[in-house]
Image (cartoon, rainbow, N blue to C red; front, side):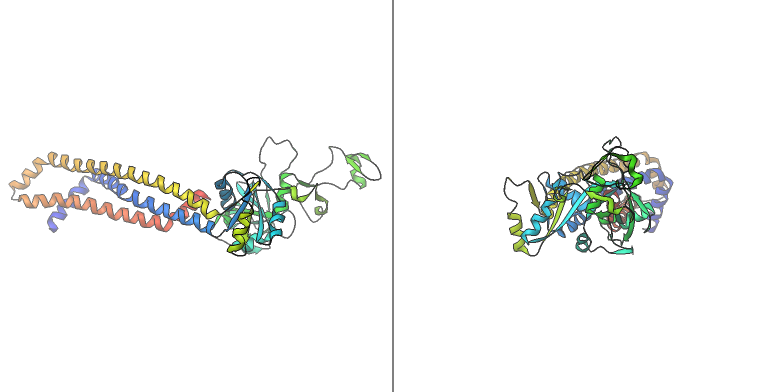
Length: 392
């Protein structure tokens, strides 16, 4: 038996290109269905874990999936906007804690998440360097953002304009980095967190400008009377909030009319959750309440359905590949007739020759299975990291 294995091994090594092609093809056919199941399972775990940790999301009526993806993973298009007054509506019920979110803008490709201090407590996020948000215009960076941008506390991050052709006068805001969050292995690692009012300033709903009552601002004054001062286009608007100019920043109108993308509602118990959901059942209500886990389960059902079709296709292709591999072995035997006749003439039995051929097949199949198992192990160990790199 050892002699048969040795001769089979020497033959496969001599025809290394044919052997490599066979092993690669069979390895992929064995690995793809198993590896796909592992990746889908890990993806499902990552998606559902964050959804399960978030009881309810309140947002404007529209696509629930778009609302959940934007609120939990800071991805997808910006959902329909709602008003900040919705926070007061939830607070008045005393049924849930309302955590506002405004996820619309970006800073060098990273999402800017406008929220409140309660969000950090809810997600269990801790500042490991620097401090938390202390003033308007501050930002706190997720661990991956700080690593990617190479910014430390005391540095600055500038918001990106939504449209390079924006002529509305909304300037990018230079934000001071107050602190860096610890690694949480979640979408929070890839976000820039600011106070909700800071996002309104980025949007242009709030602004700061030079004090028009001072003598150096005389060139920017269009008219003046005892009650009002009217500025002209020369007035200087600030695009950075500092301790020296923070008092000049203000908002016009009711703060409740400013925009949000969503509100995370954290009910005190199951009864409160049921009652709160019931308050949004009216068809005339402009807002909706969404349980994230329900939305993600529906998404995963669709993904699993697609996965089943993909696996069927892979199996069909695999059967074709195995049939081709069998054909290669058969044709190889035809081409080796002279070699086989020579082995018979020198005293080799048909059983010995058959064992050599079988050994070749066993070596190829065994090597392929071992490699497929190795790839599956690598996928199970590092697949989740690869998924996060691609998704987040």
